[in-house]
Length: 362
Image (cartoon, rainbow, N blue to C red; front, side, top):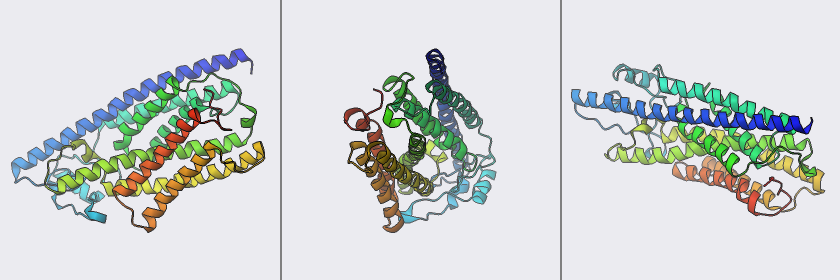
């Protein structure tokens, strides 16, 4: 493709990225509005119930009024589990129809207009974002993840796309504010700190292994981003549940729209298991590519070492939770540490350490 056309496609890509970032920002506001509005509605139901009967403390993550008083506490260390779908629906009858996703994160019957608007805006943003990724690929004449800017923009696209796909089966709209917020941060970082014009790749990257190795790495990183958001919410929810169970005031009303810490932990564990398999293939295919490019499978390059460190941390997380009883906040913190290693590997290692992988285009 002639250079002039390449440059034009690159300009279109930047325009699409800018429009996508703006749309994501509006979606972020809509998700935050949904949390605030729903939290206010739940509090109004509680006040109405309190006026009709004696106040009842609800030691669960998603109490929806007086109907939740019979919710049970089970799970390790007294962590609260959300009521089942049938219980949530029964609660809705006595609480003006205000319900949230149950412990299985299934959709309830209520109509939350701000949440629907936010999902629609996120869908529009993903479509625009996808156009930006495609035009970048057309301008470069290759897959669009050959440097840090492209890796970050493509990774942000996959984070948002995976989030939308997960909404088909699970009511994860409570994650919208946090996931879309992370996507906005990734896109801003890509444009401000890592922007790179459309160009050719260094010889070592001109291989079909770029498609295989990096695509799996980007998808795994997107899944790790989702579990990071869930683990962070799990820590907040766990603290809130303990405070409410001890008779304290519920100062984080918006967290009533979020599933219990136990539900978040279980889903995060399953997604981390899938992402870990992807990261294992990332490590394996990276070694094969290194042998093709540099004549050795492993050379203790800084990037190789940190890719292995990430694998070890998440392997430890899965093993500790499955066989050693590392549940609750310990599991959440270990998941967060793993994601911090991913961020360190992508930012600090790529920008400050010299090595064979120093081809970020900075």
